[in-house]
Length: 516
Image (cartoon, rainbow, N blue to C red; front, side, top):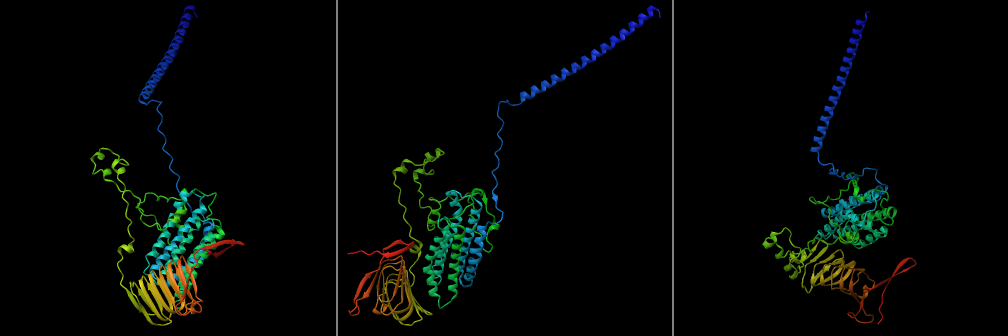
């Protein structure tokens, strides 16, 4: 190949290589330019977003508070302490009592016994909660016991509303007094407490046995069945709550407990629900748990302590008060003006009850002597051994009973005197202050209850009488003087002061005698 041609070939090759390098460099430059534009646009967008975003130093909004833990609904197996309560108290004792009561009692007594059964159902709920929860503080425990207190008050109100049921009033009294036995849950010695409540009902229970001994033996079964409920409760607490209500040391807090309606005893109505419209539980009474039972007979006069608003504090009578949004707690006029004492309203029987018509009649085998006033001599002539003399609400009256009668009863009488020849069973005096009783023949028993001031005259044939008193004072007994003529008596006072000492682990009570 000539040398000129070879030089041209080398030059052409060199040019191609240069063009390839130039094209390569242009591609690299184009890619760099595109990357720079992309970074610039990204930076612009970021700066705009930062400009539109609030300052990073502002704290983020706090997260919403967690919802409160839901109440724990107890659906587990029933604790042994509750099943034992069902077996010992409900099944063995309460249900038989409900059956005998339904067979003989009038509707008002059935209603009171239903309320009594509800109280035991409420007590079961408290026992179930105690088995599931740790022991609460005094305030929480007081709120837990409020339904129990309300049930006991309802039983007492049923008794007070049934005072016209004279033949059944002893039954109402036994139920009302006996319901207090559920108070063992706040006692350190529940067993003896239940036994004390049973003994407190014995007086009226014995009156039922005496009044219906010849009429209807089912009333004796009624008394035994009710005492069986108290005996069953004593047996239960001595086995499971010997030193007081037992709580679950490893249980849940009482505030997280929610009882299930399925836990209620079958056959016993559930306790009444809280009144509609109450936004929260009622405030616990001051004084802790003991005040729940000490406050049972407080009554409904709960507004007694409210202060009367003075005219100086009334916005519709003081334009100056309307200018502000807060009424002062005490104004100048209010502090200077002494508070007027609120007059005490008389009770309903005294304020509204009119004078009842007097009654003196023989109904069947009962002499009914009621609402007699200022009668110097009312004579029951030719009385026989089957008749009963009932005196009620008499005042300044003297009743003379000729003949031998079965029994004499005096209730709510004032300054009433009774002269009777002989009595087969007993003479009963209750809530009759300043009475006088003279027995010219024989009487085996004289019972006096809740009576202040009385005079008893006994004959020589009646010196073997037994006199029992309860909550009485100033009772004097006049005994005939031996060797003297009839009508000469020696007055002796019945003891009122007793002394009790402990001897060999037992209580020994003696009469306190004053010398001189």
